[in-house]
Amino acid sequence: MGGPVVLGIESSCDETGAGIVRNGKLLAHVVASSMDEHARFGGVVPEIAARAHLQSFTPVVRQALDQAGLRLGQIDAVAVTTGPGLSGALQVGLAGAKSLAYAAGVPLYGVHHLAGHVAADTLEHGPLPTPCVVLIVSGGHTSLLLVRDLVREPILHLGDTLDDAAGECFDKVARILGLPYPGGPAIDRAARDGDPRAVHFPRPLTRGGDDPYAFSFSGLKTAAARWVEKHRLRGIDVPVADGAAALQEAVADVLSRKALAACKAYDVKTLIVVGGVAANSRVRALTEQRCAAAGVELRVPPMTLCTDNGAMIAAVGDLLVRSGAEPAPLDVSTDPSAPLKYASLTPLPAQLARAA
Ligand code: KG4
Ligand code: ZN
Image (tube, rainbow, N blue to C red):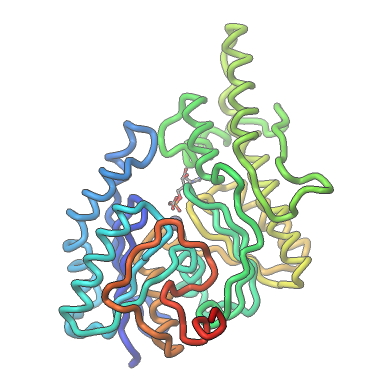
């Protein structure tokens, strides 16, 4: 099938990703992760991540081209995450992407990382229904979005976490419980043998006057830490499985409750859940159950597309190219704390006109 071929590059955190997309179809998807190098520090170390990107960039891009059976000269555009993310990590990806675009003589597009997460689902389930609600839940973000046309209209940011991200909460509580990093999968495994009702953890920001779409997980983390401490002070074994199951229940309850409240308020019939925490068995089961009860279709892309990758950035690039969006100038820079408004971090002429 014809259409422009778009190479996408992702390097905002600890994954170096390169993906190739043409006409909404995935042609290549390669990721190298530096996660193991951060494990002993209990979290991502920015300098280590940036160096790992530098080492992985060329092999990952080369492998993606091989997978698609293409040469660099056959690429029609390069899309790259320019923010948000770790500054040094973003800079490595952007410098590499600029070099490729310049060498191949093709346009470059700067993409918002979260828009990439949204677009990931299109590679598995086709174009996004308009409008849809998207819940992004990973180690770095917890956001609830109302998405219309992803590359032509502003993305409505309904809510965000005020403190820790959902995955961060899993990771930190896992550490307190003595489980390995990354904590999310470890908590999921431990929870299988636990009773979620054994302990009741708080459901932050779910009371009447609270912001219906904002999240907060640091209080939940503290509640879990106190619960562990109470056992240790009394010299009794911490019932790790029960704690894991109860924590997972609290997170799943809050996430699914708020996501479905957004679907109801905006009369949306499709909910998309992306990010590493979408892998959580209880988050999936409870969200499925609540979506079915509310008549909302639930779309969750496969895990390899949920976690950070270049294919999702290529997917946004592909939509931008096909919508005739303006490419980025070669002196475009990174924006580590880019707010989410548009999928492209290069303003479209219409946006510029509106801003003037
Ligand atoms: O999207 P992701 O791979 O990377 C970014 O943070 O961008 O998300 C990683 C997060 C980690 O916090 C990890 O603990 C969490 O996703 N995670 C899970 C599960 N698998 C991964 N959390 C809960 N249950 C899981 N099964
Ligand atoms: Zn991410």
